[in-house]
Each structure stands twice: as structure tokens, then as C-alpha cells.
Length: 359
Image (cartoon, rainbow, N blue to C red; front, side, top):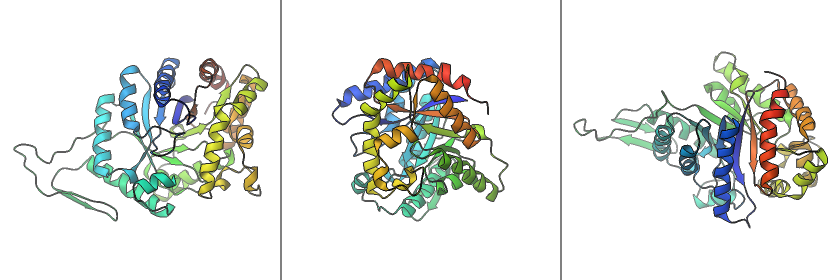
């Protein structure tokens, strides 16, 4: 099993922004040194807990500081970008990375982000925009002018082309035919999982759902592949994200998780998700009342916290329930205690993961 990062990131709003960004860069440099294989970087516009508005700029800054780790947009929220802009910026970033780029796509339901771009809140509409936007990006990576792509949400065309001065030529990615494509997945019967399976994209299972839902992700993904007459998918492409903290003892680890920014980030996310009525996705028992979905519940049931032996036990359970996957993505948290967090990252890749069942 490979180990990577998923960086939303999550930082307390009162923390200095510049310090947050420098910490995030230090974190991916450390991950590269420890042998983490990839880092997916999030993007949001109007929530202080998740302060990176441009994940491609972050990746461009991190690339020359690292040697081997691959970077993914986790995710490019296509509704907030004209597909031409997204296609050309990602192609350019792929060249700068010399092929260390992964392209994740997804949608957002943060009300203030949607307000900023004057977008509807209807999840179905946003999902259809996501699929169309991704298709436009893929077409642009192959297109030769003149062309005319007309969809329900975007009309992209070049009518004039001058080969003498190469006017109308679009930048193509470094990787051929394009960087690997991924889609984030939350609901067990997610349209994103089914679409990813139909198209052979990388599925990234979200960190905020119970492991029984994570197992459903793969079932839905495989159903999509079968519908499209694709060969049986290889589990090694599957990424599964989890909030993980490893301490010297389970008691010490739980104390740190419950009384620091780890639980604080859950408090923020639970309140945010509750605004859209999505708390059912977090429940390990569908009969739970919404009031029972607390940071304490999340730390104990959704996160994986403890000493190395306890984390090995919990991750082994995750592997057994899901049937196995290729890459474990550790959610990157605020370094409210730098020494504890760097030690946790070291233990995860060097002590815990080697002890897990093989795929």
C-alpha cells in the first residue's frame, strides 16, 4: 500500500495565513522526504478553515521544493473555472512538473462559494456541470483548431486558425494523452463513483464517511465499469482518505485529537455540512439523530486515532471491510504541535502501513 496526503487544508481561522501556507509547504516537503507518493491539494474560496483558493499555484510553488512526490488537484472544482482556463493551466502545470501531476475533479456545495460565482445550489445541476466541464477539458487537450464544442453550460470554439503563425494552437499536457484523472466520492451510491468507473478514472473516497460507505464506493465504481463494458477494475488505483493521528499511547493520541485543531476541524465541517442537510453521510447508524454527530463522535468513529498498534488494528479493519485499496491518503491537519504531527507522519509510513495486510 502506498501512502499519500490529502490537504484541504484545515487551519484554525485565527491562525496567521502566511504561517499556514508556509506550514503546508513544509508538510509536503517532509512527506516527500519520508516517501509519501502523492499529495492532493484542495481549493476553496470563502471558508477560513480551508484557505487555499488556488491549488495549482500551491503545486507550482511546491514542485521545485520536492523530488519525487506527485501532486494532484484535490479537486479542481470545474464550476468555478471556465474549462479553457482549467485545461490550459493544468496542461502548463503538467509541463512544469514533468509529469508529476494528477488531475482531480469534483463539485462544491459551500453556499458562499456558490454565491460568489452566482451558481445554483442544486446538486444535480452542479454534478452535470462537473461532467460537462471535465469532458470539455479532455476535448481541449486533444483539439486542433478549428473546432466547435457546444454543451448545456459552455460553448467553446475557435473559428479562425492561421497555421502560418500557429494562431489558434492550444497547449497540450506533458503526459500523453493527458494526466491521470480522478474524481472525489462521498455518497455510497455516488454518481461520481459510477461515472469514474464507466470511464476508468481514479476514485478518491472521502474521509468523512464510515468505512461501510467507503466499501460501497468500490461497489458503485465497479458497477459503473461493468455498465460501460470495461474490464474488471484494479483496486490498486483506488485512493481512500482518512483522518489519522498516531501518538506514543492511545490515551495521549486521543487527548491531543479531542482537544486540538483535529477536533476543531471536525466541528467546522459538521456545522458546514449540516447547512446542506448532509449529516446522514457521516452516520455509521442511519437512526442516529443529527445531534449525535459531534466532533467527539467523528474522532472516535470516523477518524483513526491511537498508538501504532491501535492504528494498525483500525486500518486492518478498513482494509478487510473494503477489500483493499492501493493508496491510503492521510488528511493533512494543522500542526498545532509540530513535533507530534511529524512523528505521526513518520510512524504511519514506516511502522503502521508495513504491518497492514497486502492487497
